[in-house]
Every structure is written in C-alpha cells, then in structure tokens.
Image (cartoon, rainbow, N blue to C red; front, side, top):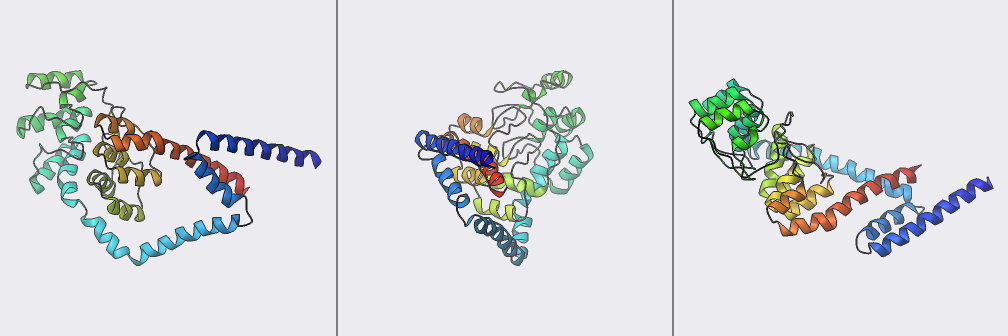
Length: 302
C-alpha cells in the first residue's frame, strides 16, 4: 500500500513540475487552459462541475425543443435557392448522374456556368471525378464555358490529371490549363442539404446560422464533393469569427481537401492575415488543449 501511495505521490509531483514548466513556456495560452481544468478537477466540486456540464447540455436540448419550429423553419429556407440550383447541379455532375443533372436544369433553369462557394462549376467537378458523359453533355449540349476559373485559379483541365483521355477531349475543344495545382483526388461522399447550408453559412460569415444548424445536429468536419470543410471555406473567405466558432465546436484544422489544402493553407493562399495569425498562434494550441482536456477528464473521472 505504501508503495502505491509513493508511486502516485511521485507521479503527482512530476505532473506539477510539467505543468509549471508549461506555464513558463506558454504563459498566455496553455497555462490558462491548464489552470481552468486543474481548478475543477483538483477540488471537492469536481463531480458537481461535471454534472453542471451535463445539465447545460440537457438544458440546451430543451431550448432547442421549445424553439424547434422556429429553428426548423430557418433551416429549411436558408440558402435553399442555391442548394436547389448550383449545388444540385454540382452534386449530380460530381456523381456522374446525367439524368439527374438534366432534371435539375429542366426544373430550375439553373445557369450551369455558375459555381458554388469555391467557384467550382459542374464542369470542374465532373472533370475531377472523370465523368465523361456529363462533361460531354455540359460542353456539347449546354455550351458551358470550357475554361471557368475556380477559387484556386484552376480550370476543369487542371482537374483531369488522373483522366488523360478526358484531358485530350477537353484540349480538342479548346480547354486551357489554369494556375498549376496539385493532383485532384476525387472524394466519394454523400452530402446532405443541411451540410451544404453549413458551407454557405461559413462562406457568408453567418455565425448565427451555423449555431442554428449545430443545434439541429451537424457534422462540423463534414466534407463536400471536393473534400472541403466549413472551416476551409471560412478560412478562405477570411471570416475570423466563423473560424473561431467552428474550432471551438470541434473543427479539425488538419483536414485536407481533394487538392491537399488545409485551413491554414487556405488562409495563406488568400492572404487572410487575421485568420493566419489565429490559426498559428491560437487555433493549433486549442487543438492540443482539447486533446489534453479529453485525457485529463478521463483520468479525473477514474
């Protein structure tokens, strides 16, 4: 028994030394997190505090339930025009669903030259996914611009690196390469309308809408047909408050899209200085603190 007590005493002393060292090295960031979690775990109020967190989550659900009709209505109408037209067309094109794409065109008369929040058009995404029948339809029947430029300066020809025969076809029709890009690796995903609302909320800097969507249930790290996340879109647009909000709700700064871009790379490409500073100096540290939190609480509960 004495050996066990001695072991825990030594471990505790080592932990105290490590915490003290971190406080010296990172006095304004990690130290604050450590002080907070230490304060609620090293006291007789530990269980009370944990229960308080659970109660807060339960109360939030009650609030959502009481306002469900209002929130649900907001969800239903948010960006619906864009989702029914541009997003529906891009989704069908990326999945190679030619008949669905034709139906979208017939029902909404969407301009198939229009792009999404990243200026990605149906031609871009169908080229990236190697959907030749869709590509031919868009070019030969719909007469779309063969060289639209997306957020990265890429044309559809850039997206054909893995599809040489499709690239030859595009070149024969007058396609030109845009700004040089890493190889495009298509992402196979199913994206709900609500998930697309998240991307548009991030694009427009709409934190309130993001919070409504969160209360209804969301995947903060969900990816679209280009592997894009809401955090990547917000970072590209320079919406610092959205970036902070998403990270505070668990957004992963390390997720990469189909071309290998992460949120920090997005911000740097667009020269979003405030977002760059946050992601480098605060956001990345917060991720480490969240990992620390999970381990700390797990040990504390035990």
